[in-house]
Image 1 (cartoon, rainbow, N blue to C red):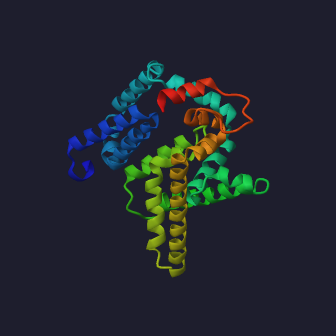
Image 2 (tube, rainbow, N blue to C red):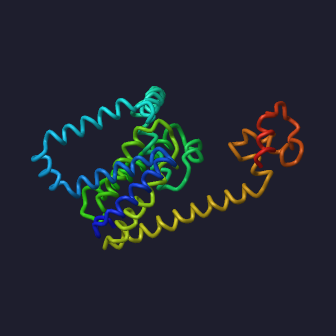
Length: 274
């Protein structure tokens, strides 16, 4: 809206919302970066002209900002996050993180959790299949977003880029971390599939979409079923790791005769928060 109407109020509102996102979740910093890079790109000609006339002023401002970041790195949390990531990188080196990211994309577009499938397939075939699907979808999405003509605003492209940079350096494995950009990627995929004049591709797209929705509906139904059925919930929640504690909480005693240990701390938490 700021780019259309040139009203500073819209820009200030965007910056305020980006700040709120950052305060809510640290990864919200990607919105700040996207806004900054987007503005730099939109006004690049004016900035080049300004830089040519005021080289020393621009260099001085950049030096002050860099110095402030170094001086206030501890209160801003930069040192903390740097040390945490450094430790985690030792546990999750580059290629391991790449495998995680592509497997996560495979899970999102197959719409089935990998841990429910991989264990039922021989060797490494399940993991490799998820990673291959994720790699193909990711590369295709990058091609559609950045190398084909489209109507996606530069701000959105910058946001996706910043988010991907953070994610590919994020030393944890969980598909839910991709949720913030998935609606955008899903829109790109659907637009590309259904905008094509190829009848065979359209037919395949419809079949894929129906299967995708069916899997999602099944997963939602199963989650509701396990959530409402206490016996099943105790058996399936966290793969049954706290089955005894849940059964004691629900029924006053374990439903199995083979119980040997019970975690009293877990029972205390269930009583306090359930």
